[in-house]
Structures are given as structure tokens and as C-alpha cells.
Length: 350
Image 1 (cartoon, rainbow, N blue to C red):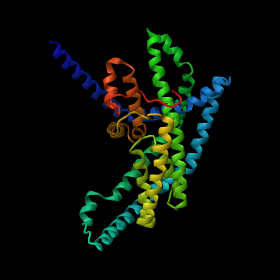
Image 2: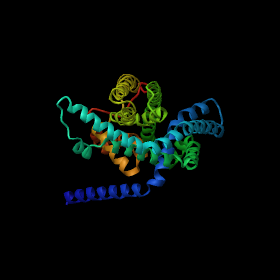
Image 3: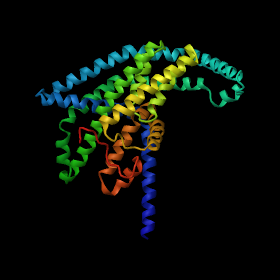
């Protein structure tokens, strides 16, 4: 009978999971701006708390932080918005030129005895379709970002609630002394990760922009922004971010310039991702490469491009939450990169 109950409990849990995922996918137009607002608010909480520690009133501190977000948003809209529209308009021409360059490359390889059927290879692996998919994803991402008023309003309310949220939790929970440390652990781990990751993502985006400007690749600011955003996805984010710039360099200048662009991405990501980030982030994220990839696909399917950007953060929050309770710690172990891991830890925690 106990085995039957356990099986029933597993089936009910799986059914509830399917229902929740289906609901999230149906509510994607409403859910993605809210999640993006939550991410922006989490990034803004350190400067907000710093201003509060300097005895700045909460309302004024929120106003200062929100004004800073608006200035950054306007700068991005000015420099990136036009590039996004121009790239979406020019994408069909780039696709046609990329297909021609790919056929020419196969013909050049044929001179060295490497015979590749260009028609069969393009049928199964068409670089032009990759550019088309990139343009569609950027257009969809731009569509989400156009809902600026809702996102900004949500950020303001989240920041206003942030300072009083611990007191509300303490009043609402039956046993706050045991539950609050778990909430504090989740909040501290996420804020530490976001703070460090945002700084290094910004450095990565700036270096990519400068490198592409030097090499005269079209839309360098746009690809720098893509590198900044996808740097939040470890292991594979930097690879995905490099694809459009490499393809565009191949279309504009040929194979040699494309290889130089790729070499620049490799050097930047080795310095940032393999040397500097681990030094300041300790053991890092603590998610296995397989979990990172599956979470990228899953959240991208549920929430679109915004889900891909938030995939690692959402999975990390789930991992930390599961680890904080003894009954669900096994889930955290399965999500981690090794059986001995605990929550992500930064040098600031040491």
C-alpha cells in the first residue's frame, strides 16, 4: 500500500509540474516582462541598499536608481535600437551573400581534393538559416523590451518592497527563525552571483564591441550587447554570442577575417570566463554543463529569448532552494556539477 501511495504521489507531482509549465507557457507574454523586471530589480538592489545605508530616504533612493536605469535604457535604445532594426532589414541580403560565400568555400576546398556536396550540406546545415534565426530572436527580444513602461513600473514597485520584505516574511511565517536563514541564503547567493556576473558581462560586451570596431564588422554595438546578455549563460553562452558576428565577418570580408573575429572571442572568453570570473566567483555556479544546456532549451521553449537569458538564474535559484531543505537536497545534488557541491559561494562570503 505504501508503494502504491508513493507512486500516486510521484504521478501527482509530475502532473502538477506539467500543468504549471503549460500555464507558464500560456502566460509567457505577461510572465516575461515580470521576470525581466525582477532581474533588473535584483541588479539594482545593491546600489539601492548602499544609498539607504547612507541615510538616503527609500523613496529618493528608488528614484535615483530608477533614473539611472532609465538613462542606461535610453542609451541602449539610442545605440542598439537602430542597429537592431537595420540588421533585421538587411538580414535577407546577408543570408543570400552567406549562402554564396559558403558555396564558394566548398568550391575552394574542392581544389585541394576535399569534395563536399554543397547542395546536400546546405540542405542539412544552412548558415543562412542561422542568420535568419538570429534576426528573428533579436526581433522578438526587441518586442519584449518595447514594453518599457510596464517593466519600469514593476521595477519601481519591487524596489519599494525590497527593504520591507524581510519584516513581512518574519510576520507571515510560523517559524521565522528557521525559515529566514534559508531565504537569506538564497537572496545572498543570487545577489552575489548577479553582481559579479554583471560586472564581467559588461567587460565582455565592451571588449567584444571594441574588437569588432577595430575589425570593421557591421553592428559592433549590437553584438557587444548580445555578448553582454549571453555571458549570463555559462559554458555555451559565449559560443552562441560569437556566431552572428563570425558569420557577418565571413559575409563581409571572407574566411580570414571571420577566423580573426573568432580568435578574438576565444581570447576574451578565456581571459574573462576561465581566469577572472573563477577568481572572484569561487567555485562559480555549481551547475553541470548538461543542466545548463537543458535549462537553456527548456526555459527558451517556455519563455522565448528572455527565458534563455534567465535560464541559468532560474535554475540556480531552484538549486539553492532545493539545497536549503534536507528532503529536497538530492535534487540539488543532481543539478550540481559534483556530488560534494553546495550553494555557489563568492570570495565575499569567505
